[in-house]
Image (cartoon, rainbow, N blue to C red; front, side, top):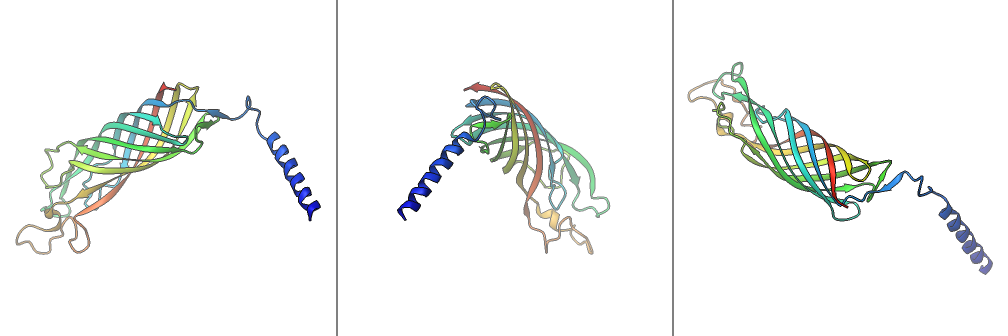
Amino acid sequence: MRSLLIGIAAALSVAQTASGQVGHDPARSPYRDVLAKQTVSFYGGYLTGGRGDADVGPSDGPLFGARWDVRVGAPTRLFLAFSTGTLERNLVRPNEPTETRYFDTATQSITLIEGGFNLVLTGRKSWRGFAPFAGVGLGVAVGSSVPQDSSGFAFKTKFQIGPALGIRWFLGQKIQFRAEVRDIIWRLTYPGTFFEGPEGATDFIPVLDPDFANNSQWVHHATFFFSVGYTLKR
């Protein structure tokens, strides 16, 4: 038994020595340290996706903004972001027949103010300059008024949350690019006029069926961002 234990220990010692020799020469390693602690970036993107069961929520439009990131741990970065854009709304007259109730579209300015965090999958290193990440942001979406809309539906200030996946590409330690896809989620609330018809009307089909639809719902928006960033502090 003693001989067996000595043999196992010797084998483990040899294996450990061999494993220490396996790997990349640091000068030739595909992994590079990411020294950036604080970064400011400017981005553009496009938001598309759900308008809700009533088909009146804002969607389909560009977004532009700025973002500040700070590293708080090996894999973790916190961020604050501000963006604004112009989205499209369908206009509806709830008391009109189905064939004619959707009569026009309008634009609405949307402002997103949010904070969140990313988990960098390669920690404090990049692989051949690339660093994939996953994260989440949350904040508020603030909509401008839409004078053309007299339906009673309004999109003003909404809580929003958005899980994200993306990748950063470092050109040295100063400049970086980021591509990101997010699912921005907010809740739409519908007025009572969407569930009822004009007084005295028979066989009228409302915008939303009161037996099945809720007066509010969460809607998802696929959003794509591309940005260029600059390292403020290393």
